[in-house]
Image 1 (spheres, rainbow, N blue to C red):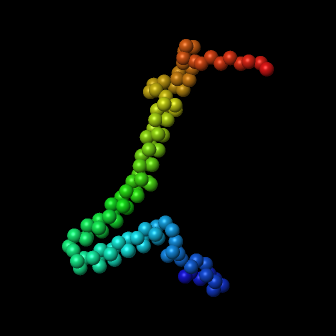
Image 2: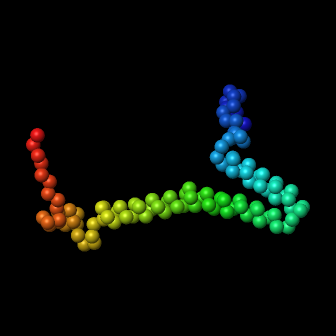
Image 3: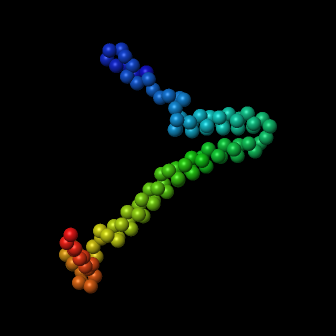
Length: 110
């Protein structure tokens, strides 16, 4: 516990019954306990402990790495398609274009 200047609690720490990362920690503890208890009966139970790094890798891939790669490729395609100017040409050369490439807009009075 962290005490403030007037002997009151500023922060009581984390809640071990909380959700999120604490849940994954408890799951890891339960799996390790199970593996240790079952190691008395079989030598191959240690393979179950491989589920922890496999699950962590899958969770990292689906929640961090894959979305980051998708955003990177999406932003790259947006930059190439809309915002990039060809080398050697200024902004005006790419903005105007020819009259055939421009869209014609017809305004209607109401």
